[in-house]
Length: 75
View (cartoon, helix red, strand yellow):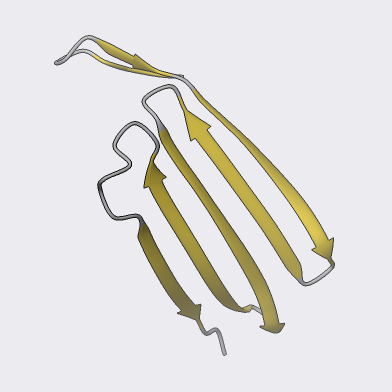
């Protein structure tokens, strides 16, 4: 739960996480403002991650959803 003193708005967020296997994780969350997001993350080398994520505003279906790709490499 977050509160903004400038706009006097409270936001409640609920999320979940599930491990498909020891190297792959799925996460999802939604809040009372209508934002829903999800990601899938895979560790393909030790400490190196590949992530696909998406977010959409369920109260404004006419807006395009956001999609992201990330690659984090550690030596």
